[in-house]
Length: 372
Ligand SMILES: NC(=O)c1ccc[n+]([C@@H]2O[C@H](COP(=O)([O-])OP(=O)(O)OC[C@H]3O[C@@H](n4cnc5c(N)ncnc54)[C@H](O)[C@@H]3O)[C@@H](O)[C@H]2O)c1
Ligand SMILES: O=C(O)C(=O)C[C@@H](O)[C@H](O)[C@H](O)COP(=O)(O)O
Ligand SMILES: [Zn+2]
Image (tube, rainbow, N blue to C red; front, side):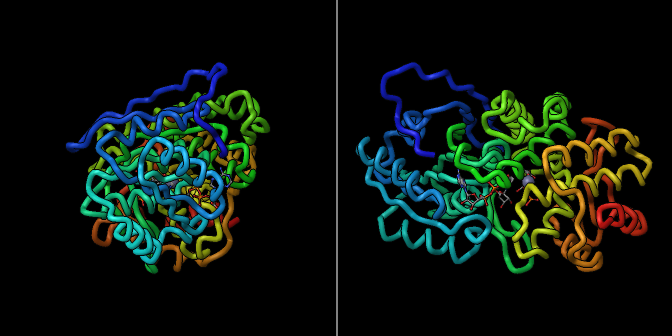
């Protein structure tokens, strides 16, 4: 993304999606459009003196554009470069950010701006949650996945050696700016990875998403496709509605974890060489098979998972780590309670529900379906 602040010319109006406050947190907006950089100072506010722009290595130029723009608005700015992708989600990188904030004299009224994909917004949001026990942050997601999922909802965190996202905090951003122009530079694999979370939103809540993709899967894979903005906005609305009702995942929010129990185990066992969305794709097929085998999901909806995911080029099989190892990793999933594994399954299209402590034989059978 190398957007510049609005300078003359007609700028199409941005779509504004409100995320209601919950658990004592303030509401905020997700803006979807183009050339949104001009909105950033308003979100940072006048109480801030310093702004830290955190970005991955791949977006050094974009990070600098954002930093310079904020400097031109009178803020004292620093840019903090993070590793790309999952390598950024470590305690070491968080500590590096804390050091940069400490050295620049970052106070409680100062603001972090996260420019990047979900990995960047996850670690940056966690740094914002933990620095001085919580400072304001703004998300500028630059991937499909970041826009529709990671930047919205306030789940922030990092990985540990034992598993994915095991350390973190609920700390919603002050606002989210989704500049669709950013997607033009995204490698196609990363673009498609984000479609997995859009398709997840389709299965758990908004089947119109599935209809749109199935009508023309080829164009769904491209940022210039005719339905890009609609797909992104629909998925954001699903997420916004769910998190507004249950920020801290005391119940209803768990539906957003559809497909994630196995997905996180795949990611960890593949040492994060798989993109999150690709793993979620396999994880959703597994969850659909589990629902079918448990007698809860009809054949047509279960089969629809493989069809729509394959149509956009997402993987639906995984033959890497053996089942016992995946099972061991799944036990530290945050939905587990004591020794009981819990999965999100579907009782039908857009009817997500929890499956508690399933018969181990069902899990083995569902795994066999994705292990081919
Ligand atoms: N907090 C949440 O609610 C939530 C939700 C979903 C996913 N996640 C997390 O999000 C992460 C995945 O995010 P992701 O799919 O955005 O991947 P990512 O952040 O790892 O980005 C993928 C790659 O694309 C690069 N990149 C980012 N934007 C770019 C652009 N516009 N042009 C070119 N390159 C660009 C990145 O530097 C990286 O190398 C995972 O860690 C996942 O756990 C969090
Ligand atoms: O926002 C949520 O809640 C989700 O579960 C969204 C997921 O897509 C996302 O990958 C999330 O980071 C997973 O959370 P975790 O609690 O399972 O680590
Ligand atoms: Zn996810």
